[in-house]
Image (cartoon, rainbow, N blue to C red; front, side):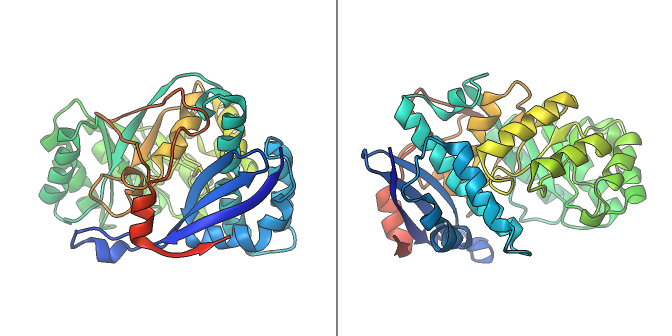
Length: 362
């Protein structure tokens, strides 16, 4: 089997939502074609897709798509001569890698979650909510709405760096939801370690499932370690790590309970599976970043024994493209049930793409 070409649709979806204009994104699909008629699909941003067509296509055409590791290494070597572009290049490789795994699944008649390890066939999704209301009461109601939608776990992102406001929002959320739903708090890399520790200690009694990225980006992993050592709340982080080496370092030093490497940012299933293995060695669970593509992350999280949950933006929110781009995919009562269909088990909704298409490549 040989790769014969790559094709993409670039599209810009809009929603009937007054909040949507703030979050318009130019997105794109990827389809890898072969001489045997099988195709592999994936998706990403328009910037990632342009990198794929401009740089990667000549390296892929003619190759055997089943040689996933070999092709991943070949593409990764392009970062050597493009200093400063590494994060974008690796995330673009992630888009390609998922399409190759989809192709491999179709070639072998197996779903990706089984090829990658096959530990389970369903994954919990947590609501990674859009924040429209800065008040504690308004934020709490947004989380309650997610619980009413069937989610058993919800996460909010802070909208104010003031520690008192963070604590007030967390208290309001727990009071409104009750004791049962899991509640996660994403600090968005906003605080210094000592302020983060103070906030953590003030909300420990609220049964927080994890405290996410509590310290500023330049203070990883030491700052994360200080927080982890000084609170009973499990600490989650690592969403910005784009290599398995970065994942290893943050696990070695930071005491994370949850590793959150982004499924695309780290380069797709091929390296994320390795990061999951490293995390298992440190007794950490895998909870990938990437609330706009739960359908992709679910396969890897289902595959490994330390897979935890995947994030999902709620349906009405513009980045919730997962709910609209496929012929059939949904999250029911906070769960993703993976099928026996080969590969990703997904097919793009051509009518949706045609409605919002702004261009094609390939």
